[in-house]
Length: 194
Image (cartoon, helix red, strand yellow):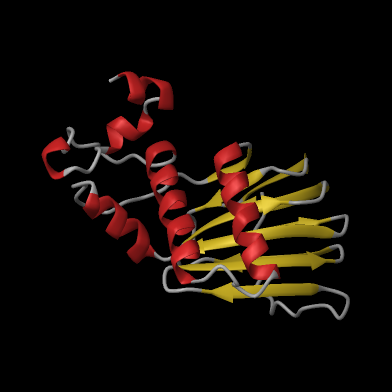
């Protein structure tokens, strides 16, 4: 049993954080020495572990310790989690505005509240690739522009809704020229043959 510690998150002097914000997405690339933090979330956050780390977290009074390999994804849809890491941490955090998920869901005629699953330490090559493209934008000052980052945010939101939500998917909307979420779930080869 564990409990969340009420603490102030102070950035150590030997940590580095690069952060960029756009209308519906915030990307934060950080490198930190061993430590611990209480993370509070007001929106869904996708985190990518970029360096191996042995970590302990506390969620809903239960703690777990695990070795996390680089490239692992964590999807946070809970309001708060306590996290401790034993090695220097290098990670990328992508915060999606609720309005983005709502807009994408509306575009696909999905009504009601859209909730993403809370998942810790899994792999997903699509999330990893989109995250690396967003990391590049943070590192180069957003040189590709708003259209590029908004496009990546939309692709990420669609991928998350397809794979990590409990939404009811509507039937095809071919008449409007917009493929339904069901069609997006099919492999690319099947789509070209259809």
